[in-house]
Amino acid sequence: MVSLLVTVFIIQLFCHLVLTIGSKPINDLLWQIYCSLPFGSSRAIQEQIRLRREVVRLKREMNAVSAQDEFSKWAKLRRQHDKALELYDKQAAAVSSSRASFDTKATAIRWTCTSGLRFALQFWHAKTPVFTYPRGWFPWYIEWVLGFPRCPYGGVSINVWSVACGTVIALVWEVAVYMVQYVRGTKMGAGVEKQKARVPVPVPAEEKNR
Image (cartoon, rainbow, N blue to C red; front, top):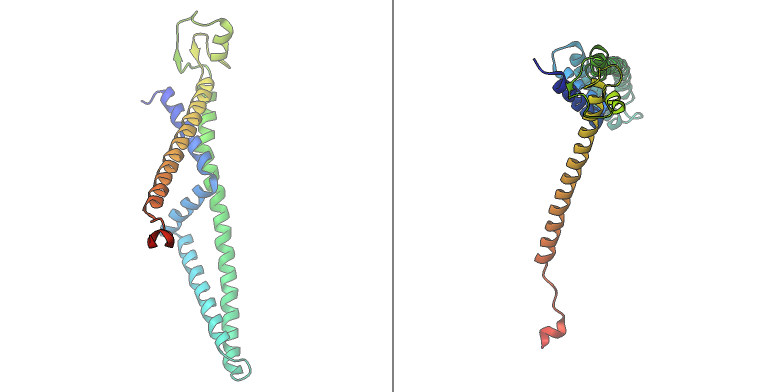
């Protein structure tokens, strides 16, 4: 069984990744995966794409026909275009409503699996020390802070451990991002220097004549 110490660290790491990436990109990815499955929403989106292509096709054909010279043909295309556009608007509204419902459910599930699970663990294990240390190592007020809010003296509470994990993860993430940007900048600078070295320096005409 995974210890409480490791579980809290993994949850904090997952929460940090979700906050860093953002809810919209995650929802967009989940929506694409959901639409690739053989569900009703997938068929609805395919129908929306088909209707959009049909509207574009009829619009082009209608623009290619003169309303004065070929009025009957133009009017027929206009009726077909208006009907296809009406069906497309209805299908787009249905897909938009389905997407809004999906985003709401995805947000609720994501919150339950991250912040909700973290709050539940903190409430359930409020009196359970994540790890212990010998009494007397620290003054009583530091022991009280380490055990905040209800952990016994001589133990580190899950709340304090969660804050510590979140702080360390954020610091390590910032250092990692800085190192990646620094390496990329160094490589780009080296590439620019190589390109400058390869460019021949033009020789003035006077020196050539000499």
